[in-house]
Image (spheres, rainbow, N blue to C red):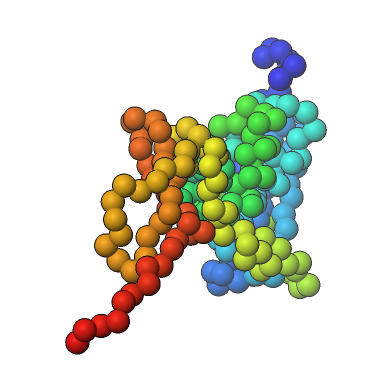
Length: 231
């Protein structure tokens, strides 16, 4: 970041999002407090979720900024604040946006966008209790509720038209990083004879002595021909 710490602006962004019902029509509201101005924005989608609207509100707020800033984002969503401040998003990103070997995080499309915006600014997320008298939080709630009740709301493409392939993880290949420790995996040949009617001609192994994770390879699966039964 090229700007000095002395010249960078400190901005506060209050956010809220919700649906009625959940899932259902959803809206988000944002209040941005800049040293030289105050801004309010809102919007909605015809079908989405509470959590998506909470994340989207933070995205919309950060997208208002035209230059790098020091930002405090206030939200009553523990899901959003914990994901950003307790390292959930960092961990998913390190795993190429996978939560486990076979499952992506929910709302990965929005987490990616939010992460990119946070790289442009110095961002801290703080939790505030909802409906507890915080004037800016209450304003965001009113903005989001008004937005979701509008007619002709657009589609939340990441929710309604999520590609099925998004959650299908490509098979690991030799030389690619281990999904636990990032050490390049190597090909290994099993030493034991098959105990079932199939076996794997080879498998992939993480050579890191502190990991040693193994991965079966579907294309290496072979079936054993069964002889005629004597019974």
